[in-house]
Length: 373
Image (spheres, rainbow, N blue to C red):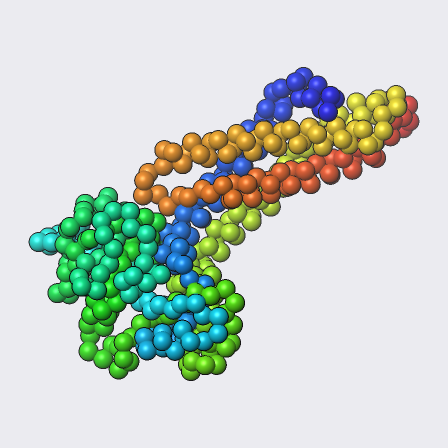
């Protein structure tokens, strides 16, 4: 430790350059992870925050809400099955909100209409206003981001291309679906919107897209065997089934994987070159009795200090960047992500240093001193 710190203080500029490069790498990793998590949240926060454990889809729908159509009569049946604590229907459809008495295209806002039964476990926590009510089918609860678009409590908006109008009676937070604000409406009103075209409900009584289940020990195979033409999956699998979700997250993860691989190579080369520059020093130290273990520990300690310092600075820069990012930017940096990628970067740096440690063991003191050709 003493030797490592002594050299760091002596060659400040050389090690400062390494720290700057490592900081930039760490900064980029954290920024990408935050953007990836932000996009993931924007795409499926409504699904992710719902208090459900499993989802029942139509067989062959590939766990996609848009491809599934079931009857709400199945809700009563599935509630009687083993380990099912509660069941609630759900429907989704995409639409466009148009401010009342406005015909301008710039006043249009894409929204996701989520149909649920008022009072069910699917209803999100209200932060302002009141919750859904069957007595007021056109009263809706919307995500708070709609406030930024000029929508306030009590406002009425029309669904573009239809005669349906909805009134905002409450606001919720962190509720988005397919990258747009979620608008929660009673199931009866959702059916009027989703199946406005004659025959679009395929003649199904009480059509819904899926049935959400609560219960920790539910066996999907039992549900599927008891309910014909159904496919039961975990909520996580249902999230993966959302259009474009898997591909979007896969792209971000691939970018992060390449960045980490490149980071390992760049850091390994830097540490190796610096070690090779000190071959003669290591040879002299070996000649006066320093062991490979002692020199190896000095290198590893040095890399650890450099890496930890760089990661901490990278984290501070990332949080600073997040603070000045535009409000609409899909950026969400969670503590668990920061810790995970910090550990990964630290492990990469430590593994990269092992190449340098291995080269130290091969240093011949006599050759380093110039006594042997």
